[in-house]
Image (cartoon, rainbow, N blue to C red; front, side):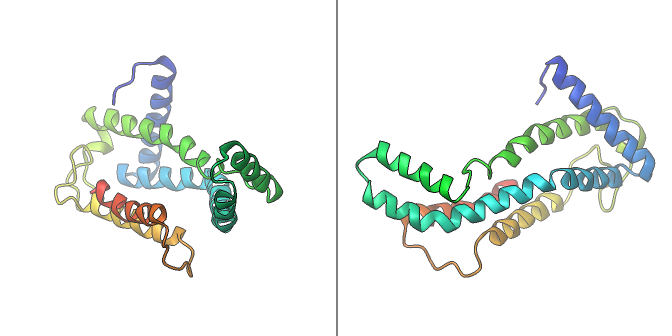
Length: 188
């Protein structure tokens, strides 16, 4: 993904500089990426915690929202008003669960572009091997990284579900659960 917007290019250059500095500091591009990931996850931790709390609050309000849908099923305006009032009473923001992902998407895209730029430069730590990878400038020859990433995503989605959640009879919820189980396979 090559985007030619000056501010985007500056952002990618900053990420490339950060990754290069961390690679120099740690002596390895792989360790530099790991250090960047830990640093980034630490910085967005408050947003992630807020998103998880919002998600949990939304799950707790789900039965009440279902009741409102049954009560005001035909009157969309009234249903919307009652739902918003319910959110306000319980101080829940339905968008709070999405915001951290919206913040992370441009950073991940920029990070991808920065790593591609560094690895195609053909010099430094980026052409050296790391763990089983002969070179960070080449794809994983045994495809272990995508499998591990998919496995971690699956575990993370399982952890997001309430521990004692009964099997849902709602077809929409069942479809959502199926999608959440299949999504990690798309990484591989």
